[in-house]
Image 1: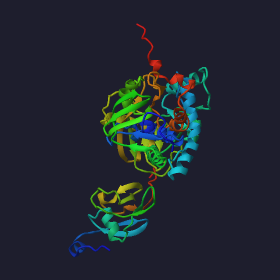
Image 2: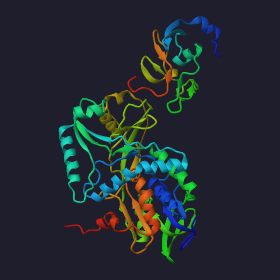
Image 3: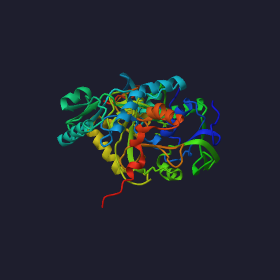
Image 4: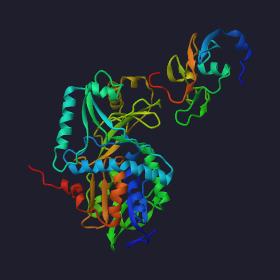
Length: 377
Length: 100
């Protein structure tokens, strides 16, 4: 363990104990930093406990090819990341990469999807990856249970999924083993930058650190301006349904439906703008259930055991923000809506850069400055 | 392990059904779970993840430990279904199959 370099008790304080904060804290501690992770309590707004657990590549990054490349890199590093976690903690986060499908219910949708994938890959500086547009018969060879309404779909061999609840638990166990000081019930009220470090007033007392990383999800919007950063994120609600556990039959994840490692079938992919309201909307649940049954009619036989709504952390363009403060150097923000997919990057690539002192030019596209362009009249 | 009260033993009609294909009998009005216990079947399933054996516990629809396959449909709560003549009850090994 290294001594705190400057400005207080810790080399780094990570604010936020969800998947983004935990992956960063894990990577920072592995890089030899003395780390505190400041978290809220059990009732925090925590998408890490409500997400769909895809490690997904296909279709991401239209409008920002750097994000497509960043996503692909995390997908490529995920298997090694899962191995490291298993060796360290003895826990298996059930990462699988069998390739994923985006099935389609109309020829128009399939054509639009094919066009999107083509435009994505025609962007300058795009790191291309393999994918296929499949007609119904080709798709049915891979996904034998599709219903009569499915006209085809897209497939990408890089797509996968994991057990994201176990990922959160595994990261928390891992950071404990690495000596990270995990502090729940330490909601950060105020951050001051002085004497070359950061002073945080929290619900659990004062904490000082040489560097800070804002990984607080929705709360980063409030915290970022305290250190000259900007994190204009909003909640976007998504509903998830999970069925009883069944013997494995869906061998590939899709955007809408996937079977977990323990056998339950998750149904998701709704999008609602409803502020911080996580009340379950029966109309939305029934709509996603009906759509899932059109994809896979045999799901209609299964009993539902739970359903919930969770809140994606979304920037105006949907891409992540990674940035170091100009006015308070040593303060970083990291926010995205893909805390599962990008966990490998956060732990293995981003954290070591923050430990070493800076993000470098390759992260310039992810700066929140992209949102500060004057609006045309 | 379980014995019927004498007045019930004599008062009600017999229903024939099967447990894992073997002929069995119950009393009219028995739940599937009660009929299993009366026939000496105390472990009616193994769990979906670890495969540990489970038997009926609460008998009132809450614990979900009495799950069995009834007439081809998996994960039915035996305590919430009355046994019927000719019913095919199967103990369940691990996860339900989606097609049954």
